[in-house]
Length: 279
Ligand code: C2E
Ligand code: CA
Ligand code: CA
Ligand code: CA
Image 1 (cartoon, rainbow, N blue to C red):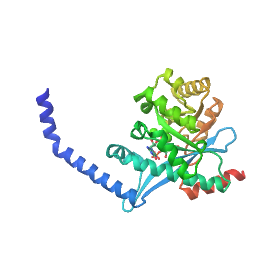
Image 2: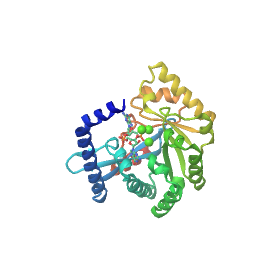
Image 3: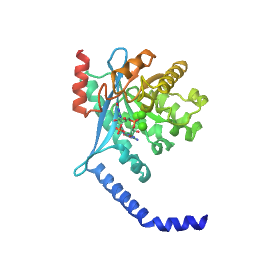
Image 4: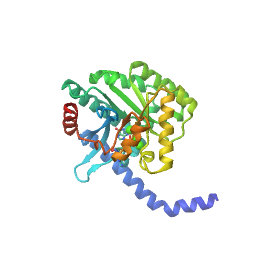
């Protein structure tokens, strides 16, 4: 079997090399992109399903490539993870999100929290909490204006350490939500111990609503679980009224998705916030 593996490796080696050099090339251009300010943030509103007010916004990173146009995070976040670039990118995302939110707060058009996605590598740093809090302070944003999104995989990698890091953040006033909830492995025992504030139901469960019986059962179960643990619950990827209606009926408090708004650039989000306030 070993022999076979070796042959197979040799057989595919040129292709692997081509892939590796493509990734190396991408990593170098990503590093340059950061220096050239080619990274941008867009913001997606998170809506209160009862009042249809904007409860918060989620910051999502984009790479505005001068030739290739907009590159989505699915094409560069894992590369940033592998190369370590996620550290400076993550810091930039936090600073930029903080700056924008401060603007909207100063303009009196936004009173919610901004949610920022953390990546596994960022989450593994033992000095995460102190670094993040120092950055917030520098950016002039209160911890209570910020929410971090982590996945089940990230917290379950080292549950004991996750409890310590999350507790440090929460004690400083930051909120924590579990992103893509239901797609990873998480232990209910730990869920009880993690100082999290909300669960975000992955859009793969929202997709089939309200027609799909399994999706109905799953979303009901997650909403019930969240309530019984005293957590709030956000549905992701809501694309039409039927989904929003069903979610409202089962007691889901918050929702995000194209039905309400696509992720918007800062200027467009400012307009959205102003209009939402007048209504
Ligand atoms: P996520 O955190 O689960 O973000 C939600 C994704 O769903 C976003 O994709 C958003 O544009 C998309 N989305 C929102 N509403 C709808 C909808 O109604 N229908 C559909 N089909 N999609 C919807 P995006 O912006 O491409 O981001 C993909 C992932 O990249 C994010 O998933 C997150 O895991 C990661 N990511 C984005 N920004 C950052 C960042 O600043 N740092 C890190 N570490 N990861 C990020
Ligand atoms: Ca997220
Ligand atoms: Ca998600
Ligand atoms: Ca995701």
